Length: 270
Ligand code: SAM
Image (cartoon, rainbow, N blue to C red; front, side):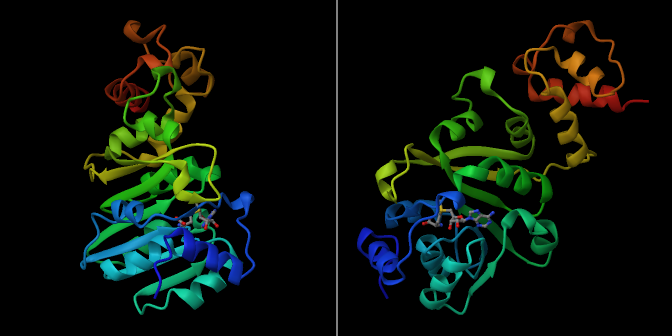
C-alpha cells in the first residue's frame, strides 16, 4: 500500500479518478507524511480519532495504523467513493456528511476512552468548525487542527489584540492552546496562497456552572460593534444594565477572559 501523503501518490489518485480539487469545499490535499506525523503525534492504540474532511485519505490512512478506531466525515460524495476504495482498514468508518450538521455531542458520548479530533481544516469554515467543536463537546480530549497561519496566531496571542474575536475568548476559557508546528504552503496540492499552522487545543474540561452556549451568545453581543463599548453593545442587545465604572469606555479588545466572565456574572445576576 502506497503512502497517500506524498506528491506521487496524490497525483496518481487524482489522475486515476480524474478528480480535480474543489475550491468550494476548501480542498488542499496534504502531500507530506512528516506533517501527518505531527498531526498524529498524540494518537495511540487507545485513541479514537474523529477526522473532519479526510479528502483523499492522507491523514486517515496513517491514523488507521496508529489508532483504535477512525471515524471520518467527508462532505464530498466523489471523495467518499475514492476513500472507500483506498482506505481499506477495518477500523476506518466513513460517513458522507457535512460535519456542521453532525450531532457531535451525541456522537462522541457513544465513544469510550481517549478521543482526539483531527483536521486539515477546510479554510472556508474554519471558525464554524472550531466553534462547533469547542461549544458542543465537553466530550473530547483534544482537537488538532491545521489552519491558516494568521488565524492560528490569534489563538496563541501572537496577533494584534484588535483582531481578537469571541471564538478566541471561548477557546481561552475551554482549552489550552499550543502550536504543534508551522507548515509551508508547498506541502499541499493545490498549494494555497497562505502558510499554515497546526494547533493543539487541549480540552480543559472546565467544571463550573456555565451554560457555554449562553455564554457564547453573550460574547456575540459584546462583539456586535467593535468600535463601541462593550457595555453599550450589551445594552443594545437587551442585557441588563451594568453599573461598573471600570468598564464604561472599554471596548472588546481591552477586556480579558476574566473581565468577560465577571460581566457575564453581572448580567445574569438577578
Ligand atoms: N484531510 C485531507 C488532507 O489533509 O489532504 C483533505 C483536507 S482539505 C483542506 C479539507 C477537506 O474537508 C476536503 O476533503 C473537503 O471536501 C472537506 N470538507 C469541506 N467542508 C466540509 C464539511 N462541511 N464537512 C465535512 N468535510 C468537509
